[in-house]
Image (tube, rainbow, N blue to C red; front, side):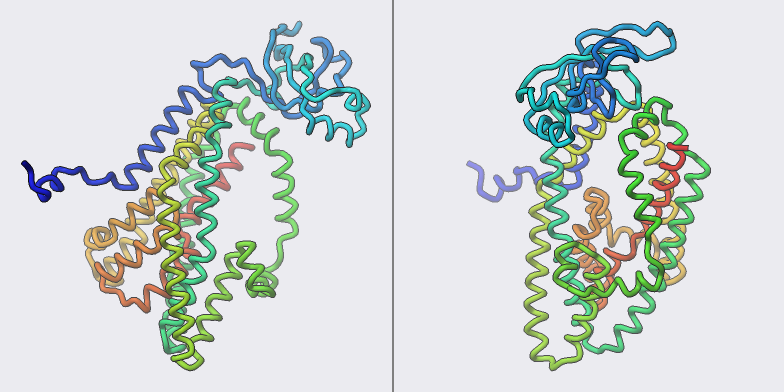
Length: 442
C-alpha cells in the first residue's frame, strides 16, 4: 500500500491560471473559425440588416414594406440576380415581428404596426449591399448568443473590483508613508518617471504604425460594413471630442465635488485624487486615531484582492466566449488586419521593454536586466494572461518586496498609482489603435 506522502507526490499539480487562459483563447479562436456566424463550413442562410430598405419586389422602384423597419435579422429564402452584372443581388428574406418592434413602430407613427400581431412572419426583398446587409450562419449566431454572457459576466466582475481596489490600496499606501514630506519626494520622482516612459511608449507605437500601416489590409467590403455599423457611435465621439474641456478645466475636474459619486461612476482620476488627499489627511492626524482607519482599509484591500482571484477563476471561460464572438463575427480580411495590428503592438511593447526599461534598469539602478525580469516573472505572466494591471497588483507588490527588497511603504504608494496612471502599454496601444482606425477608414 502507498503511504499518504507517496500518494500526494503522484498527484498532478493544478494547471497555472495563465495556461488555462491561453487554452481558453485558443478554444475561442478555433470555435469562432469553425462554427462562428461567419464560418465557411456552415450555410450562410441568415442576414443582418442595418438600415436596409425591404421592398415588395426585387426592384429599386418597388414599394417599401413599412414593417420592414423592424427587421434586424432575417432568413434568406431565395436570391435574384440584378440586371446589372456588377450590381449586388436581391435577396428574398423572411423575418418575425416582435412585440417590442411593433411598439417602436407604433411610437414612430407607422400605421401598419397597429394592425399587425406579434410573432407574425413577413417576407420582402432587399438588395445585398455590403454596408447594410451581412450574411451569417444562424447556427453560429445562436451559439454566440448563448455564450456571449459568460464573457460579459467576466468583464463585469473585473470592473466591479477595480475602483474599490485602487481606492483602498492608494489610501493605505499614502497613509503608510507616515511623514508627509516623503510623499513629495517619492511623488515627484514617480510622476516624472511615469510621464517620460509614457511619452516614449507613445512615440514608439505611432512610429511603428505609420511604417507598417496595418489598417490598409482591410478589404473594401469589410470597410464599408464597419463604416455603416459604427457611423452613429462615431458621430457621438466626434461631438464629444469637439466639446472637450481645456487643461485648466481638466485639472479642476480631477477634484470630485462628490467623492461617493466619483466612486459609483468609476471616475478614476477623481477617485485617485480623493484617495491621495485622504491618505495625506491620515498622515496629519494623531497616529493612534489614523491607524484604525488604515487597518480597516488594509483589510478591505485584502478582501478586494480576494475578489480579484475569485473573478479570475472565470477568466478562461470568459476569454474563450469573448474571442469566440470576435473571431466568429469578423470578416477574414479584418482578422488579417487585426493580426498585423496585434503584431505591431507586440513589437512596440518589446522594443519599449528592452530599450526603455532595459536602459533604466541597467544604467539607472545598475541591476542586470535578466535578473530583474526573473524577479518579476510571476507578475509578468499574470499581467500577460489577464491584461489587467489591477488584477496583477497584489502579485507585483509581492515580487517587489520579496525578490527586489523594495520597502512596503514605497510599493504601497508607487504601485497603485502605477497600476492606474503609468499606462505605457496602454499609451502605446492607443497610439497604434488611433492610427490603425484612421487607416481603415481612410
